[in-house]
Length: 424
Image (cartoon, rainbow, N blue to C red; front, side, top):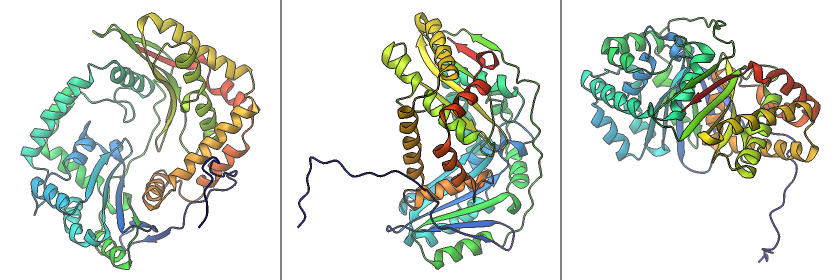
């Protein structure tokens, strides 16, 4: 029996290479791509069905969102209650999520119950009924939730920020409004479903511990229906990208919510990986410069962070915080100062090495187990990144230099090119 020395910490070694676990790709008879990640030790299976398009296939605002919400609220053979009760009976979890670029259904359950649950999933995907009564209930709760959200400065600042970057009527820029919710009809949802849920804009990710039996069920269920979706062409809106400053007073006068940032780029851009490192150093993790100076040293806020959000066709960078009004100007000054320092002074090697290790550790978490791996593969496939950028991203992290980051900061983080939103 081996004696453990509890005074010694676990060993560690540098992360030199990260590769995606093995997966297979099959194109079904109707053109749907099936990606399989068959691994793991627990008898759990995860099925993700993804439809690209999202808001870009809408004929009216919010129809993509409400179509996704109503998908699981009734089919030709099952009521909303029957669907919920059956999933609960088998201990299954079904999420239907909508995003700006896509809608996806995600099922997680024990492998032995997969074939029992699939008839319901099949009907949800191919035979939803969008019941009028369910739509009325969801519209009512959505309006109530929106009214609550609009009382929060942080929500308001984010809405104003995205509108300023992309425009109030653009797919990436518009926000939920009560009037738009009230105008949604059952016919709108049927229309969107028929035009957006095609086999030509769909792909499937199957992950977990399962056999060829479950794989064949997926092939037979989703590989025989051929249905075209409405094509769309993304056109970037260049009329609203001029930097601006927006102040919006609210009843909450004790705290101000701040968003400052600009439009950037998606995952395919040559600077994405390197700027991801720069963002992490500036405000992308708990030990970041913004957090250390503005929270830890000065005590102006409880939380401050920066983020590089990316979609299929675009992306944006922003810094976000909430501060007491008496600290607002000092906080803005300190944010600007942190940016200027990162533009004029090279990042020291210990800090850069630590952030590189932190990011590589996060990348390992993305492929820790079959379910995480399936999620990562789903994300990569969404913007057609599956195959090469995962290794390329690691290479950017490994080889980016302090000089590279200083040049990127000078190129992308100029204060006069930022849109600033202050709410409160």
